[in-house]
Length: 265
Image (cartoon, rainbow, N blue to C red; front, side):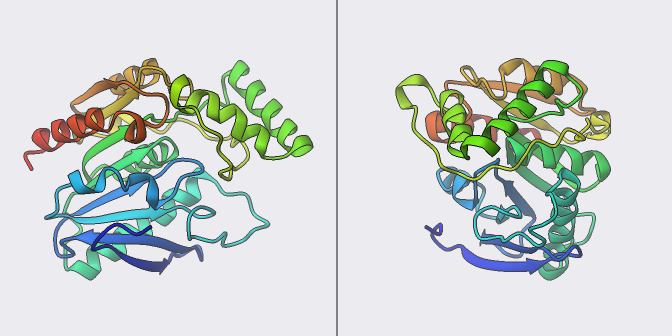
């Protein structure tokens, strides 16, 4: 399903990714980019779209291997660095197409994996972002022994028994118990080389959204990240698991409004 008044587009990045994205709002306005999580797509943000500022050029991205964006090189493992590079190419292209200067600030809404990519890109290019809304953000875990073991064990089990094992594990923590549902979304293997970026370089206003029952990205993770970024930041705790836009949309809208107020939109 395509959001009303959104167009479906493709852009080829410097690495060869044929990146699919939906674009709506005011195409001549500043950019507001939405980045989904693992197993997600542009459709992740459809509940939130009506509440985004319509005087922005709103862009919903399908990461490589998800939604309508195919794998550029199926034999190569997707990495955070590749996603970050693709995002940078897309932002540069969209700014040029709309006539916006490189100094025009971009707002990013990222969920889970999308939040990780936003944090990495923001740390590399802090001058680009004007504000961040990060929902259930991920963080490097490969250096933590217990987390590393869990990821390796899950990957081995998936190889032996199929992707449904991962889907079943995700369904336990993705939703409140009374809204738990099976998921057959795709998944990529653990990237144990993923390391924390220099968060302190991110100086734009940032609002973290944490589900009070999120076992994938617990509230404490958002609290920790909030102390690490270099600009003003806060944490909004909502009534959800790892899918706040499905379980507590009003809470996410409140967090969005808080961010827009902070950046004086």
